[in-house]
Amino acid sequence: MALIYALQAREVFDGRGWPTIELVLWLNNGFSVITTVPSAISSGENDSVELRDHDLRMGGLGVQKAINNINQIIAPRLIGKEVLKQREIDQLLINLDGTTNKKKLGANAILAVSQAVLKAGALSVSLPLYQYIHKKYKLTAELNIPNCIITALDGGAHGGKNLDFREFLIIPASHLSFDKSMEMAAVIKQKLEELLISKGAIHSIGATGGFSPNLYKNSDAFELLIEAIRQTPYNFAQDVFFGLNAAAYDTYEAAKYRIRDNNEGMSGAELLAFYKKMRESYKLIYLEDPFVANDEIYWQEIGRDLGKTTTIAACNSISSRASLIQKGIKNSNFNAVAIKSNHLGTISEMMESIKLIKDNKLDLIISHSSGETNETLIADLAVAVGANQVKFGPLNRGERIVKYNRLLEINRELQQLSQTS
Image: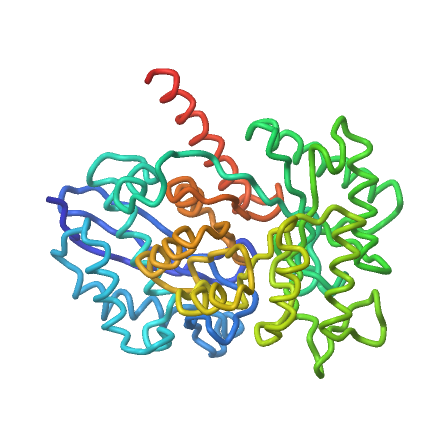
């Protein structure tokens, strides 16, 4: 029986250079695991609270308060706990905090501990993390690699307002193997960079590492991507399709959606018409957070009008919360949910939401955050729970690449297992 022997949290940096938490957990058998938690560039009203210091140090972004909460409050309560009892430990963390949004101890502090317990559980039974999660939660019959939704261009809060929407995405067609789909994504990225340079356009990168050119209209981003794809061996709308993380809350002001494609601002009905045009013109098969959360009539309308051909995903609009997912299911607001670990704070709460999504036959997307680290847990998680798709960001920067590389590694392992069985 593996028991928790010690925990030690410390401050490190995420991919944007913002402070975040790294945690080491030791077991009584001498083995240890290390985990780091992602952070967000923005948070919704339903997100659990990411505790920051808000003092003069690190521009107020430090996480020493959250670290002290782990080392001084949480750690003494966990010493001697059986590491396989994930739900029991997560509930202890929730009770220790005692608030509805984890603002006392910090969702970042709680998530660091919850992730470490999960990884230590896998280590204690000598299983790869994805196999441990699969056996423990039994949320899918078979282990497969999810399709990747890959960021090509950063906009909105990720790109310095060069474009209005947050992520312009490429999605490999289902007929491509995982290896081939990643090869295609890499080639498209190379050609996109070459194209931007040849046009004398800005080819700097945004918050998550996607290119952030200044364009006149959001639709120009898709035209640029089509031009880049034409310079590859792959065919648009056959081998690769487009997606969009609209992050509509970024553009909503004074009851209007304000994007450069319409200088006067758009009503919900006008924005819906814009999305329909994008779907028809650019084969948009994925659309995330197309409206603000309380624009329910248009969530329902876009589901009715585009839901048969397009994945309509809720992410920050529902903050991965089971209660809000259930409400959206009841109102037919979306046909997919993008889950982020830092929305909730514990692995057990995330698993509850994932089970709800799968039980109701919605598409499940396991998603990155803007402030990612070299932690690969979400790659293992996506395989283990049978996610339909993953979002890890662009094929750029170490904190993104490490997750794609982990999927490549798991894919090789699954292929070897299938050959020997």
